[in-house]
Length: 425
View 1: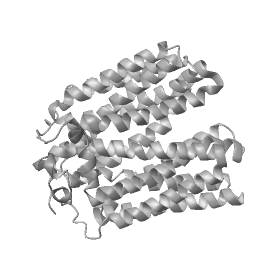
View 2: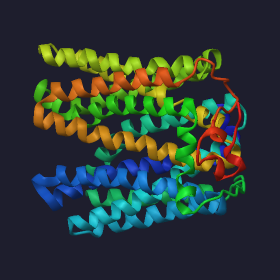
View 3: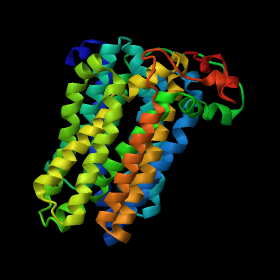
View 4: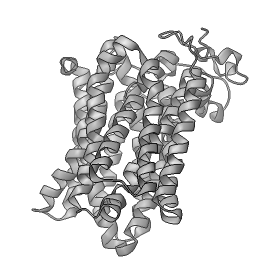
């Protein structure tokens, strides 16, 4: 996979992506400590609200920007969003009220909701070969998981030497370095496209493209299954490890690391597997892998037989299943949209995926608090299993592979969006 880094443009963008991820990870740790300083015992509520604001920004902003992305040079857009994020991170150490955190988090995540889909839509144009693009998707997944493992460790080391406010400086440096790496490269110009209708029609174009394409509807169902598994891990690991199993704080990181390790192993193996068997053969079973892991863990909770080794194994399988869904997703989107529609399609995918998490995060946390961990896990299991079944029914066995199967010309309202929307089978 590292052979892709010989491509100068991709090397700059990937390095910018990794550096920005590390900066974001440092900022996440610092934000948690800042919330504790401002809110004390209510810090969890503050962070929970900040997380909800993040998801709302992702869901609301990305489709709107995707509708107009073809009018702005991509390099200028990416650099502007990096500079915006750097400015917000620079302001965070100076806040002294909780509401100020909420405002700055919304601005920060709104910029990310612009940056990430634009970045995702650019990569398939830089790497047009299917094999190269698949490797790039695996590298991206590896970058996300490595960041989740390394950033907390780096933050812990730095906090032994400096106060947490200085971690925000690392976030600022990360975004500025990302912008500096994007500036010297030439990126493909957005393909001009004319779509009928007003702002609403343009903003919802990507979502309607999604709904009119069977394989993308199946992808959304699988995203919901992945969110069900991931939410149990992200929201409830600390309670399961500390209270249910009675283990130390350090073991929380080990449990989260098991999830990341499972994801990374699959990401490394997927390029060859996808090349041999295709997306459908890998992704459709992923939903059942996630549901099975959740179901077995729920049974362990109900019977009181959950062990430390069992939790690590379940988390590793959930990480593997999540990677089986998320890593190949870009391949499906690229095959299902015309080049001019890629920004809108990736923006829709970004918003719809985070809508799934907006549902499952409170489900995992709220049910665990109100009805107990077993009930929460059972609900997430049911959601994952139902999503897996829906995905199987939605993804046609006659999927034509690399040919678009968007049924836009037979979907009321979408055909009027312009000729770029129509991809007959």
